[in-house]
Length: 235
Image (cartoon, rainbow, N blue to C red; front, side):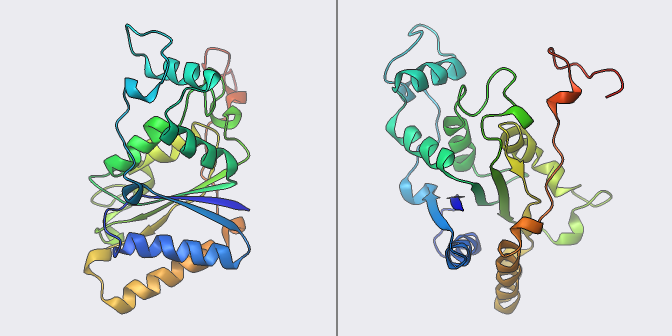
């Protein structure tokens, strides 16, 4: 299996970085080919702009998705985007590894999604969800956070973590066709003693060793909708 880990944390000594290293070592030991995009180390540019296209379909008005399609067809995507697109298209499993910031992902990772999930390749028109461009591949979110586990859930203070990250789990990964595995969450990380942090990494290592048994999150199926995306009667 070919694995791409997209790592988004500015501190190389962070627990998130330790999760990334653990994933690389564990998956490589299983015989998988592992590639890492360390966005901060690469100084990846997260800002989508007209500079992402060497040639414009419409030089007078920037419609980013349409320009993505045009650049993909003409081979004029910015080189840093092209490199990341190729990595995603080559992988069987995509792991997004990041700390949760303000109920969301770091701006660096959001910008990577904005620029790399290219319209016309990853999605477009009716090529979404189970008909998306990345169908047949799996994705896994591995996130660290400061909150305690009891602070998240249906009746808990902050609500459910999967709902909090729906914009990534469904709105990005599921939308383009990935089979999205149940996320791995590392809770209360900045406040844990070293022994508990080590135990959490062992839980992460065990999860990576049992990916085929990991549940997949439910996603919409276009078989239940008509050509205008209205629900079919009885669906």
